[in-house]
Length: 542
Image (spheres, rainbow, N blue to C red):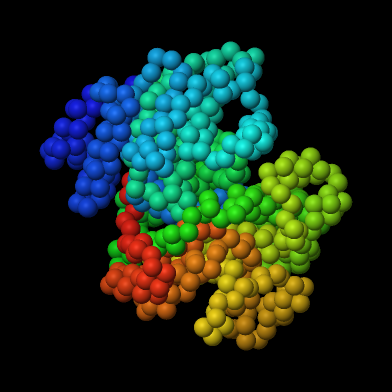
């Protein structure tokens, strides 16, 4: 077990600017004095929370940052790449235990009360062979008992998954997990699209690994974290966890999945990244998790229908990301024909009739959410996913060549796929994002046009599709930011339905963007300013 010291000794090291700990914090934060000071403050709060719960003791400390995905929204779980940075952080103090109890404390106990659980009592005796099925049943069981979301579930997800990983099929333990006392302090806004939940999953699994002397390569650990988090009821990917585990100071990570591959790309200092919080919490939006899972279902239905409609391509299509011109060896016209073959929307009954051989996969998927009243918007959601996968790879190419304006344009297109409202004069109105047959035929005609501009606007990557998880407040933040000269792009981050937007802007115009957001969004609503320039920081670790 690495790094055990008395809590008072950790406190002394944090106060000593010549200590190895302080220098390590400087390294992780690029020497930015304000970030180093904030990190020290958080560790001080976490140490205090630990001492309140357990008194002085031998502990180790670790940090786990939040993430901002600049490009590649809602696609990591379908094999699409992301382009992410890490910001802010969660400071965690961990004391090992001799039993298998996990005790959780928080520097903000009103929002996050103390929790405890025993690993052995939360898991079945036998090894869980199908984690997806077991977590789906556990989620249904909790819902039936009226047990809503709880912050402890994210720690449970990590620790239970880790124990199950070290269990034989007959239930014998390859390693019996020791429990631990965790105390957490964080400056990551909750329910803001910055993956505070994934930061806790990563922190918990790293804590469990250190307590139990386990080493797992980070690429493999990324996959474990993504799967572990299914315990809370979502069916997300591993993009958040990858960013948290691999991030570097002042850099963007281009992360590909299945398998995990990471490329570190420096972010040009002549541009800044502004994070603006709408102060609308996604968790308080009615049915946020339900909406997210029904979008995943639309992806799945779309992929299965493409395989059925185009059997010549079926062997090459394992994930939604595989439906792209280069992989299938087709042109953009053929890609539009593929999208045209998808229904604009379907009910569950219709999907099952279209895909009788896929009944098992569909029914598993349907168990994660309620059927949408208007049906699954398969064409527009699949179109979003297909084109977002293209945009995500293009963004990495732009970064390699320091073409930040190109990245900004892609961020703008991506947000159009999530946008739910637009301005007509001064009035904000709801948008219809459906993609009709006529719309696709028009794009096909434009591709054949002699006019260069028409051909360019008909390019596949320029089509936003319709994932539709923005809210009017996020749209207003984006529109306000885009009016400022020097803004390359603006769009939502995270799963949507609340949370934050990101703005990429020329550094010298950053203060003007923050001022415009304050005057155009926060002040009229009587809200405190929640927009700031953020700096990419280093990855999670003990």
